[in-house]
Image (cartoon, rainbow, N blue to C red; front, top):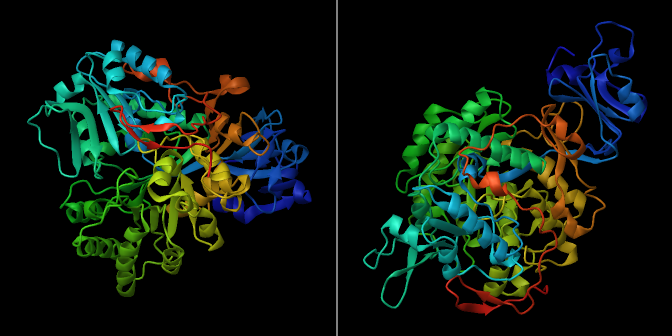
Length: 628
């Protein structure tokens, strides 16, 4: 087929062979030499399409980067021409490509090759061994960084590493370990590199832990503001431009390994537009993007948020870009004074009284410019105040067609969900509670941890809902942990949070991660379903998602990932199909030795009556991983 136009397929498509084949023009079944023929056919599989009229088929035809037809093996294979490439799926389960509703993929790519990932590592012993090896191989002035995506509950030991263990593993190389967004551990070498001593004052909203003599111990605490954590790691060296390009390619391939083909990028602290988007823009220009990205612009400096958005509105607009890289809108940070950080080790923060007037001016400006926005909101109390603002703006300038949305919403009330629905908004949920459920349970109790976030109620109310991770810092970027969490309601430590009726079915969870998220980037008419005219983005799984034991959902990988009809990842019998990827640079990168997510930790540990222990060795409280 010479055209890639989706509307051509829509106008000319007919059902051929009843339910056996849906798609391609009827001309495909004539003897005409100019007949359209597929470029690629995948056959002999169990293909979950997301198309209600044909929920599972055996084969799929792809042309021009979109799905041309779906149906039975016989009806799809007979569409093949001499130039058609055919891939046997060997009976494997195929799903639409996963689309993360909230992933810091652009920032994550810039730093991926610098980071030692403890995501999924099953024991402290293994984590410390990795730390020592990496410290021994990291040249000055570089640091060893473990930047989020892990917690103590994933470890068989059921505790945090101690500062003594960290200093023993890395006595000379600076080490920075970020624990979610509540604290960070620094070894003595990192304290020296930062110039921290007994005279260093506590930053606003943060705490430098000290010994009895007043010397910093190496623990930074967000109380509850994470700026102290941001500012500390910002002092570590960055990669050069070409290494950032390499790093971003390897991070996207890591995402492809798990079947991720799209992401809604939520910006991030220190991610300035347009400077820090030059790498991802070059990758798009060069045809090297293997994850489709719709990105939002994140206000960078307190007090200068309006200046940021005034400038950006004059530079770009939502929808600008390509099918692989496009502007989505504003957020997740619209105003620093509106940030209610998700630190359940601390009491809920009260937003400043001045927040309303500052945020309303920004939201009004965005609405006037037809810019959708996303806003970080952990607590219902914050959401109430935000919705008061949105409702006032809506009276002056309707916002119900913009597709704005709330990010996270762990404690949102039914009343506020009704208000969001009335304003045409949505909710992007992530699996942060899989990493912080024990902390929430300890602070608020067993009844309060149930239905947090209340996904079942959101769906019952008909709200647009998309699923994701909030990777790479506050939680892991691993999509199957999120899907597993929605299905089982377990934390990574094995604590069961929700009653059975509040958990999602496998079909519901998958839908939120495939066709749920494209609503938030106005792409739900072309993404997330394997149906004629939609992007040919899909993942062939290592095992059948619908039949594996629940805890083994976390073990799933993609053995063949396709984006726009192009193979972007292959393993096992499809390993030879994987496109070449340049070697990791720099050569001392942790990725060369340890890769990314450790997919060996399948069954969550149980820490019955295990003490919750801080990094400084003090016991905070007794926890229980035995379920609620």
